[in-house]
Image 1: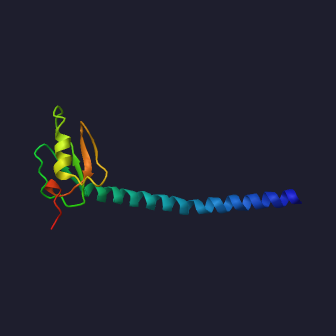
Image 2: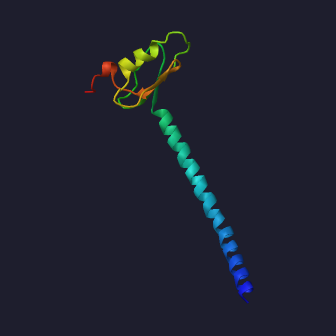
Amino acid sequence: MKLVNTLALGAALLTLTACNNDGIDKHIDKQAAEDLEQAQLLAQQICKIDENFNVFGCKFGQRLSFQPERFGNEQLPIVVMTHFCDITKPVYFNKAGVVCIYRTANNARPE
């Protein structure tokens, strides 16, 4: 009798789990859509500059990405960091470029 009860309970749990799977799929789809929307918003918040240092349109506190089109001048990332990065926040750089938080030129405070 205990075996029958155990099997019945197992079958009931399996059925409930299978029925609930639809809700899990919907939750995963919703989460994926929210993640995609968040990624798109972040992409819009990135200010990209090149060797011309054109920062028009960049806003204080926005992520700044400097990626020169050609390599060779290893001083460019340092120049960008000096003039355009909030150095109180994390700054990531190498020969390929810089990623930081934008602060107005020469680290002046915005008005």
